[in-house]
Amino acid sequence: MYCVTVLYPNQADGHFDFTYYRDRHLPMMLALLGDNVVSLQLRRGMQAVDGSPAPYLCLLNTQIRSPEHFASVMAANSERVLGDIPNYTNLQPIIQIDEIL
Image (cartoon, rainbow, N blue to C red; front, side):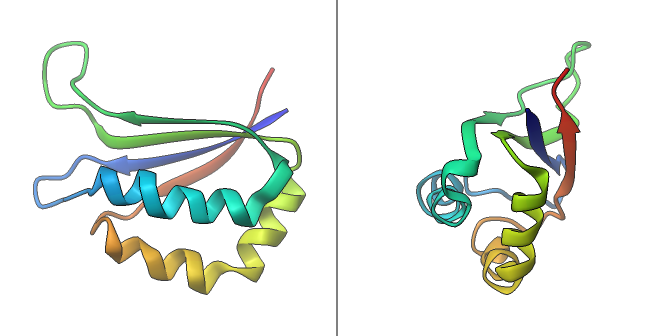
């Protein structure tokens, strides 16, 4: 099993529309990825352990069956996916694929 982790850094000039992301962007992504998605978890950063601002504003973990399938879907739909980002944020996401051990 694998996990796609998407992190949006918490920056002073950053904004993030969680409603748009949850209600519009994620359903589009789920439709594109189909049954490769096992589960999805969306989180809003609150604070660091020491009480300072959270280092990430938004965190998304998506468990997937195949990183190859994920990569091919993203390559085929990159314009559509990347073109939607300005609709919900001005932040640059950090994306990585993890193996769940």
